[in-house]
Length: 121
Image (tube, rainbow, N blue to C red; front, side):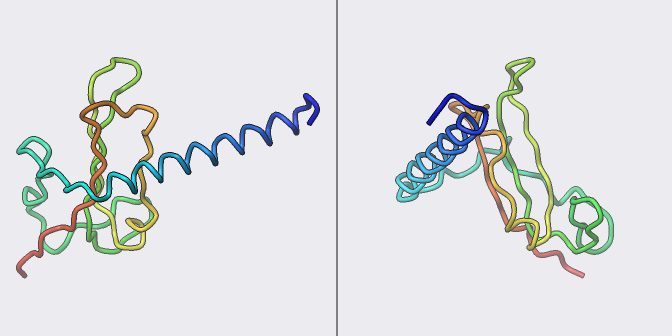
């Protein structure tokens, strides 16, 4: 394969596929380990929403009721301090969700999807 733009792009795609495969294999290896219980500061407070009815999905343009809360904690590259991103998503958008900041993973990295508690009407 010559040193052309097409060749470099192909090598980059292959390397990304290999990296994803390694990450998935490592994740599967860890799948046998029990999930640690979240600490108080890791728990997402979904009860604080005092509005009537279930919360809406956070995705733009989606008005379906949220069913899950997604939490990801990673290191911010500009300040090197942990950042937590949370979103309440409907079932369809939760199925599409996955870790987005693996490059910013660190010892206390968290990616968690939890069902929202049932609300009493």
